[in-house]
Image 1 (cartoon, rainbow, N blue to C red):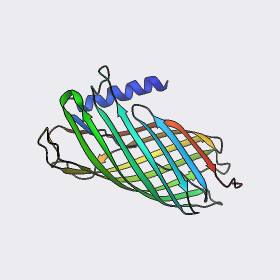
Image 2 (cartoon, rainbow, N blue to C red):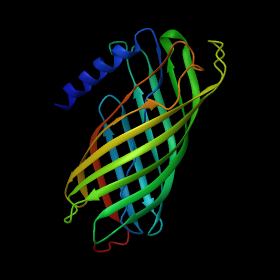
Image 3 (cartoon, rainbow, N blue to C red):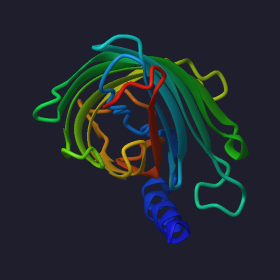
Image 4 (cartoon, one colour):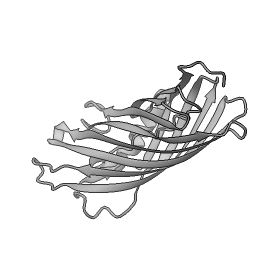
Length: 230
């Protein structure tokens, strides 16, 4: 089932990029849902893009972590030889209400990556910055989680020597919904969202293209290094 979903996503999304270069693939949204100091959240997800993240709650309200997202195609894939990879350092503030099971979080991150299409001699480095408020609704037995997040992303592209393209930047607003279900410590993770330019893209190169969708399917694991009773 996951294989067919992957192929559908690739086919549908590739239709948007005919004659263009894929400059931006939105990374999966990170909502680690820490509950107290010592919590560790590990997440792996994919469909046509893959990502992995790790996050640690160093206090009852602060956390830090990192995530990596990547995509690589071959000659048989719809994206031709495109590749995309970005590494981001993340962190922020969270608050979990033990009585209402309401989870609030304000996070941000800064990172760097590379995107390219070797078959067309296209490659460019970029930097990334984002801020993201989110709210989570967690069931009383903590086996089901629902998260709503609104990420604002700023992407800075460096000068492209081969294509004679000057540096430019793009901003995106990215609302996402994330569902998790399973045991208290290991849950199936599903994510769906949009990525929309916040302003017009008149300063971008003519071949500029971006993926307007965020899809994720994977696993999230949570544990506490102090083995506290939740």
